[in-house]
Length: 210
Image: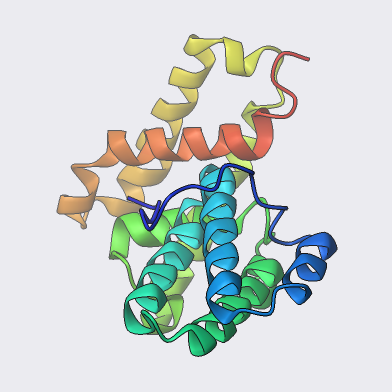
């Protein structure tokens, strides 16, 4: 799972991880151990809060957090430094990565999800150029149809419209592009459900019910 179960949740919720207030609060902490604990809890809380907006992105950071906690266990000075570096990378977000001409906030979460579902948990840099081009085209096609359909009135309250969009994505986008990747295509319904859930958190959640 994307949440890393380490330690006990603090009684008082941490300040927002990416805020200036959080940095100021860290400057007041002299103990490397205490600083590491605060950073750990704040990073876990941030991942938990934003995971649905970009699952592949936050899963990567969750995995990295877990590795850091295991690698530098009890080595508080190094751990605090590494967690601060991790926070800075999370703050930069997708904009600090190669985005291939895709919108970092509204398109790259779909790219990341498709990359993970089709090719597994590997970085974009490990993929062949033709695989990258394949993902770019598929992402743009899927995002294009999603952006068009979710603008319709009451889309998120209308199961029929959602089902129609799922069918369109499967028949017109996934089938032609994934028919040779049989093991992946077998999971087409699972994949398209994840795409729709991601679309809700990117396009629908804030405006849902308005």
